[in-house]
Length: 304
Image (cartoon, rainbow, N blue to C red; front, side, top):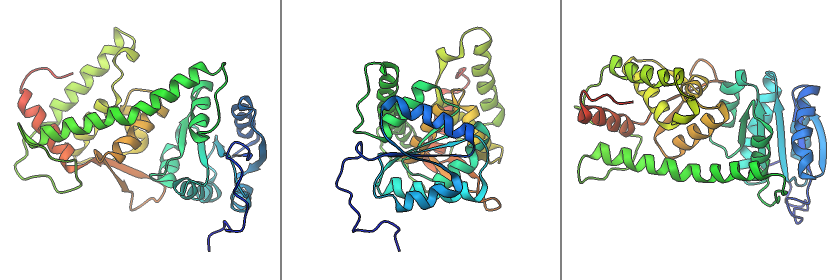
């Protein structure tokens, strides 16, 4: 039976309702409080991971739920994340999960493809932007200019990845054709690409950071595509945490791109059959064929 009773009063607005925070330690709870307080919203409770699930299930309504994780909370953490993933999909409230980098894999596995905002060792502007998106009716103050800019960038992300998906589809279909990115078996006879070719391109891209600021060349979608192509050719499996590193951008940004690429059908999630707290990522078949066709067409030209 669903824990949310239809008899509960859900009539007041999201912003009128409190924000619930939970953390894996006292330090984590303090960071969560500092992230929420600038919004001048009422904090309904500060909870341990073990207590948060029961409180959220019994809470009539909430503006948002903020979970701060600086260590692995084990089963209580997994149960709580599963709950908020379900509730976020049902649009019961917005949610933000702020984590330490070592927790990327278990958190991503638990949240699946829910619309929960995930932050990885984020700064204050990223935190403000995430909470603004989670509580869509909360107005930003005049002091949140950086957060407002970040939020606008996030809103543009899906459009950018959509253009990438369209380009890959055109490449896979060849001149004059159109084929949607689909999770089907790749066509027989796709052009062969050597692992060394892809590795050389990745090395060349990373070498640029020796001479220029790496931020000048941030292109996480392309970097992740190359990493997954190399892994596919080499018959390797890529966990979420490794793919975030390959993106060569802050982990929070990389994870947002990854989630959007999954939603667009360019990447596919695969559960680790031996570890329920880990997810592998791979290229969708048509994305793989598009990349192979691209490299076959450009030939020996240096692609960076």
